[in-house]
Amino acid sequence: MKTGKRIAAGALTAVLLVSLTACSGMSRQGRNTAIGAGAGAVGGAVLTGGSTVGTLGGAAIGGIVGHEASK
Image 1 (cartoon, rainbow, N blue to C red):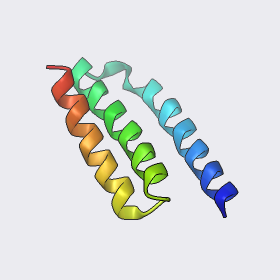
Image 2 (cartoon, rainbow, N blue to C red):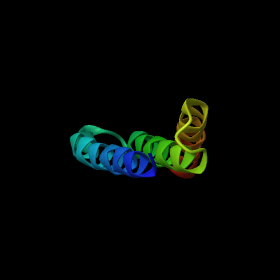
Image 3 (cartoon, helix red, strand yellow):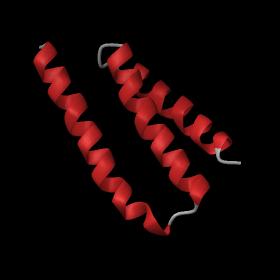
Image 4 (spheres, one colour):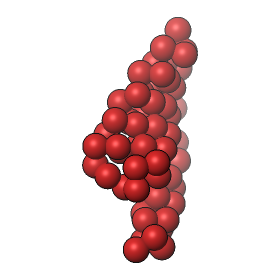
C-alpha cells in the first residue's frame, strides 16, 4: 500500500507541474496561489498518510500562504 501512495503522490506532482504550464496568462499572485495549493495538497497528503481531510487542509493552507506571500 505504501508503494501505491508513493505512486499517487508522484503522479499528482507530475500533473500539477504539467498543469502549471497552462498558467502563463495568470497573474503572479494567482500563479503563486495555485503553486501553494498544489504543494500544500501534496504535503498534506504525505503527512497524513493520504487522508482526504489532510490533503484538502494542506491545499487550503498552501493556497493562502501562496496568495499572501505574493502581495
